[in-house]
Length: 166
Image (cartoon, rainbow, N blue to C red; front, side, top):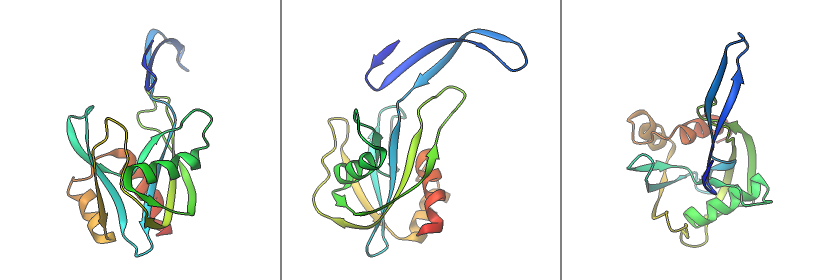
């Protein structure tokens, strides 16, 4: 079943390694995407605060989004950085991939580090995105995570991957 282009739900018949069969195992496909950890040429970390309807809250996190049809993951990362923050870079590095809730979700996210980011414009998100762009230093980033201001698993995991390169 496809609710829309962003969410597909499947009912699978699964035989587990122990032989048990589950006739109605639900799987969600949120699609593949990219998340980017942006660092300015001054060493500031760029974050986006925006209302996220799934959680019903304003969430702080890194720019991220689904691949457009035929788009390479790195291109998605650069595009999302520009659309959601107004920042651009030519210094981007692939760090790895993430999946949240792999028991039910099949959508992987590739993680990129974008260094030497420069503000070139204003955010231009889609109709669901009204964003506030933040620029924080290393200590503030750690504090936002430890104090629970940043709760998005994708952002926390991407930060953990990027830390050794910052």
